[in-house]
Amino acid sequence: MQDRVTRTAETGYVVLILVIAGIVWHEASALPPAPYDALGPKAFPIWVSYALAALGLAMLVRLFAGRSLGRGGQTMVVGLDDVIGEHEQRPWVAVLTLILAFLYALALSFRSVGFLPATAVYLFLSGALLGPLERRRLAVIAAFAVVAAVVLDLLFRKMFKLDLT
Image 1 (tube, rainbow, N blue to C red):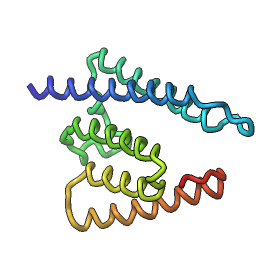
Image 2: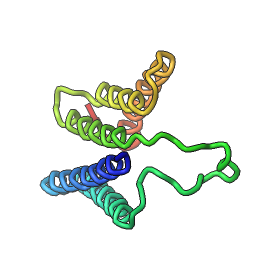
Image 3: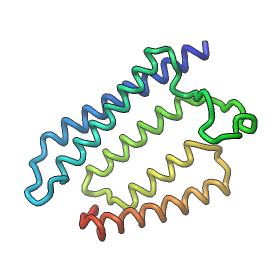
């Protein structure tokens, strides 16, 4: 039963990734090309949609081959095979994380929602979703979310010359 639930969640996750890639591509294709930059507000999201679609298709091939998305055959660090045991699979966390990312992108499309608060809230909720709800851990996640949102805002403003407000 658990295997079927995991398979359904993994398939749903892949389908959601492909749907989001299609939506991003469709919306970005409707934008006018930037006259000043080859990698502008139209090209960048289109390339992101291509990357999402490639990731989704690779995961779909893995599913059709009978492999699970949530299990690795070995660790990537030599010598940790014995230390790291079996991890609990939580496929719905992956689906909820993807939905949260979609809601974040939707929130950014509204002029009344600023980049800084939307990013801080998104990062906090994503971090909270990925682990246990402990007061100390949530405080660290909140601090990280605020600092990361400010750093990303500065990066886009100063380095890429994009005002995200």
